[in-house]
Image 1: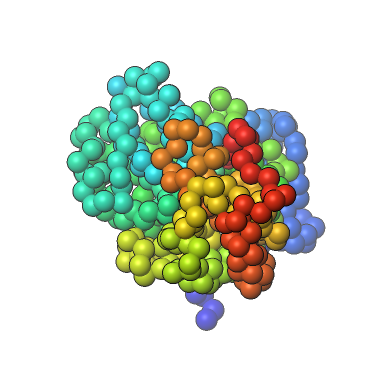
Image 2 (image 1 turned 120 degrees about the horizontal axis):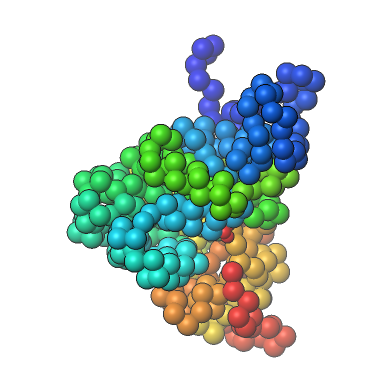
Length: 394
Ligand SMILES: *Cc1c(COP(=O)(O)O)cnc(C)c1O
């Protein structure tokens, strides 16, 4: 086996950079410096441009995604707004209708205010992207797969072809599958987006974002890099250090979460209290064949249940859970559940009877038993359960 490239989980476990040659430490140092002596070896000057505190995490993420360069940001939204902010008035974007709601809302307002054309498409339907792109004007096609919170699947290679026909970049939100399950750049995408807050870090203890490209010399990427340096949405070194630490166990966590999500999906498929289980790992899911082609090692740790007892039950069930926590966000080691339409507000396209589940690394039997008892209690409107957390939206 000598001479063969190590597998990605091996690289991740070693944090890509390996031991520090100066002192043999097996983890990289936490380097908080804001400024660097001029004329020193690596030519750094100021930490808003470049920081050795964040570069090890960037290097590992770039490697796992198969990209040439990764940039970390202060949040997922800071990364997404840097990418879209690289466009100019008159440009055009095609985006997926079913996507992370915070980004959909910001895109709508930003594009209207800055004279950027925006068309939403049902990207899971073949041909919709090709029909929406405007050659020479569309700069970015933005997709998410599997997409929040219905887990619609988009064919990345087909989307890339349609984007490239028009001279646009394909950007893929890879927050949910992570490079463990999908490597969009290998399927033709030009840039990968992450809310690193979620599965990449995996411990619900930082807010961070990332962009990765395989074309670091492209003019659009130069503008993204400049936006981070001048806009200042950089990740702090401590958060970057925690992120690198989290990514060292990414493969273990993601594979375990996906195996458990599959078990939960199969258990509640055709359950009397559940009208539909939305999970691309089920053969009945309309995107299953495409997902099986472009995903590996499982289908991710996110799924949704549409409850037979409707919206009222969907509002109550998260609060009837005892092990699974009623909270927004996803990708942590602890499982979370939420009533998604309640989080997104009145203009949400999400069905009211849907609960979204982020599967952690607990024992699968404990999670299934918890959901069973919560469905029992939640459906009957059991006293003592609080419901509807007002406008506490994230
Ligand atoms: C959370 C999330 C975002 C936004 O990222 P933040 O880190 O919260 O700014 C974008 N896309 C997806 C799929 C997310 O889950």
